[in-house]
Length: 113
Image 1 (cartoon, rainbow, N blue to C red):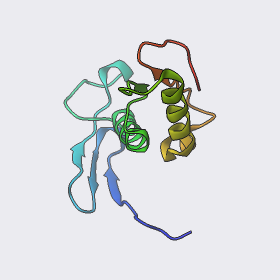
Image 2 (cartoon, rainbow, N blue to C red; image 1 turned 45 degrees about the vertical axis):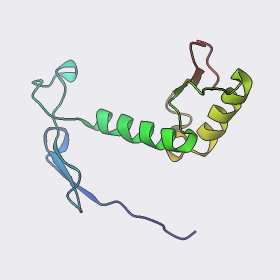
Image 3 (cartoon, one colour; image 1 turned 90 degrees about the vertical axis):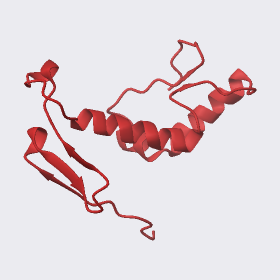
Image 4 (cartoon, rainbow, N blue to C red; image 1 turned 30 degrees about the vertical axis):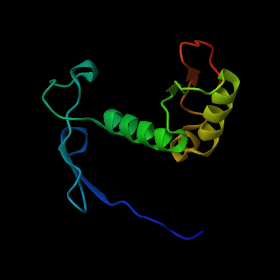
């Protein structure tokens, strides 16, 4: 398989440190959230970064959110599209089996994955 892109990010100081991408576009302080025993200072955390990356990747795959509202698409077709996107999304594949993910269509509260 040919490598299409490699991201390079440097982390210093762990969960109370700083991360910066090689191109400087990502350049943020990390802080442990108060809920996890941290001081609650301004800054992001690995959980937020993971959630942002997962949401962006998944949305790019399906052009919707994990809770999908696909205008003009029948419920069953929307559900099939969400499942197909979940099958190919790199973040979905990376977390499959160790992160529970529910795919929902509109206000449907039934888990489909």
